[in-house]
Length: 286
Image 1 (cartoon, rainbow, N blue to C red):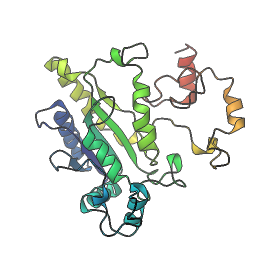
Image 2: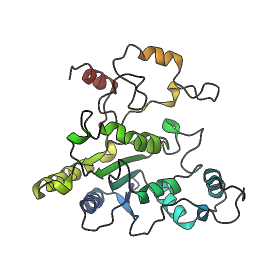
Image 3: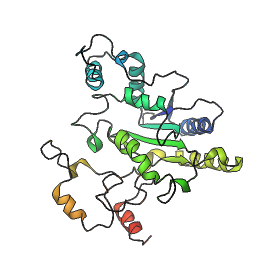
Image 4: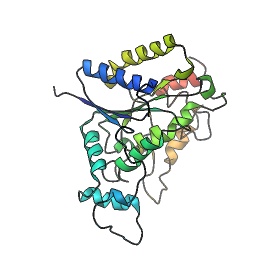
């Protein structure tokens, strides 16, 4: 069998950070398990975060108004994207799995990683209106978030001061990764390592090392498939009436985002589980 490739998109300024240790464990464990591992160290690369006209080589299609999405689509089709974008897109093409490794900043990724997503995942290369979500361009690839928090796990509970972590993760996991078609694996969350004793941090790394052994065989998170929606401008890309009617009898929403005014399905963005398992948890049977 051909050697599988994993890309780690890494964003932390310090080589002595816990994020760096997590990255190193991933490189070591995946390599030991026969994977080819690529690392994009965004700070070390001085990767440019801002998406500008400089990302396009040559003339704009509309010099009067640079519409970034349209211009990069044409540039991608014509081989006129900047070299740094092309280099990262080649890595994405080669990878069966992408791991985004970062510290949680303001409930999201650091600016340099957001810039990687903005600039590398261009229209045409990563998505189109015809190819999105479970029908997306990268539907045969997997991706996941691996990150540290400055807050404790209880602070990100539904009754915690920061609110439900499932809601925090929805824009990244559904709106970015799943939108591009990726099968999204459950996130690896390292809760508040800066305030944990060394033994706890070591245990976190051991748990990560153990998970990495079977990572690509894991069941992805569950998202609402496109087939449940009327995928037309006339239909407003809304949930089909018959699907909405069928969901009326359910005690919980379809997903974290498609909650339909109901309680959120438990840990929809944290753990991979079947609809039956979600139902049992929501009904208090598990």
